[in-house]
Image 1 (cartoon, rainbow, N blue to C red):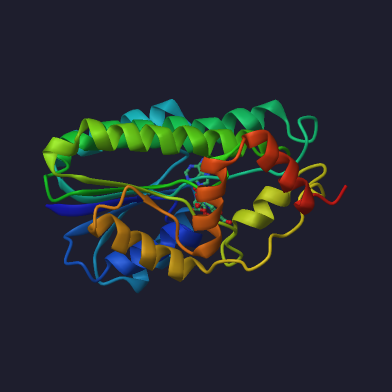
Image 2 (tube, rainbow, N blue to C red; image 1 turned 30 degrees about the vertical axis):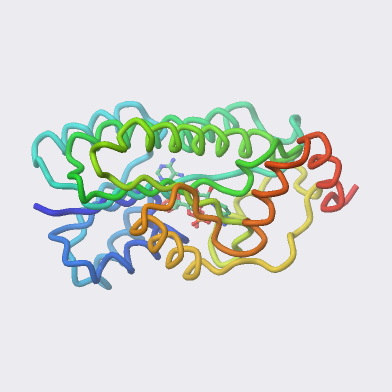
Length: 255
Ligand SMILES: NC(=O)c1ccc[n+]([C@@H]2O[C@H](COP(=O)([O-])OP(=O)(O)OC[C@H]3O[C@@H](n4cnc5c(N)ncnc54)[C@H](OP(=O)(O)O)[C@@H]3O)[C@@H](O)[C@H]2O)c1
């Protein structure tokens, strides 16, 4: 059974990846997110059968259950796309500790666990796409833990790519910038005080990010920066001291 696994499939980028993979002659797409009804609605749209795994990826028992599902079915995983993730805008006292830890659990722990458990089922023609962020390129005050979590995921992905290069599997990190046509920003702003960071100019569109990143993983690109702004951000954050980048970032602060 040839399959794709997409986390965060109930909205935004994840759902768009599923719609795009629907044309790739897969036997099934395994879709993971908490909102079952959203995944069921998506299943009505796609020609490819969806296996709905409605669950909370921050729960360790859920990760074990997914591992068991893999062991029972022995699929060939052509695509693994880790798109589930969330961020929170605010100062350290604006976001409850529990939420910060949950962000790390989802953006880092679950992404690593899903990747590790899926690797035995990925053939040499397989593709792994980790949805990171431009936030991974530098520390970002008031988006602190989110940026750190994406930096972790980017580094994990790059090192994994190098480790398994001889297996032929393409491993790509995509680092988008500010995407307004997903649910991410509204959720990120839902904190005690999210006014520190204003909306960034020239937002990206999810369809464009999905198209560019799938093209990138097909071509075995290590890091996809889908657009001029994420590309420039990556270059500048690589060349300039992070203290300078953080000071420059104050231009986007409201106070
Ligand atoms: N939008 C941006 O500006 C932007 C920029 C750079 C990077 N990104 C990254 O892109 C990825 C996709 O975000 P998006 O913009 O598409 O946002 P989104 O529309 O909010 O999608 C996030 C997805 O993650 C799922 N999810 C959240 N918590 C979960 C949990 N505990 N267990 C399982 N699934 C969970 C959500 O589904 P349920 O709520 O149904 O569980 C949803 O399907 C994220 O990793 C994000 O960090 C976004």
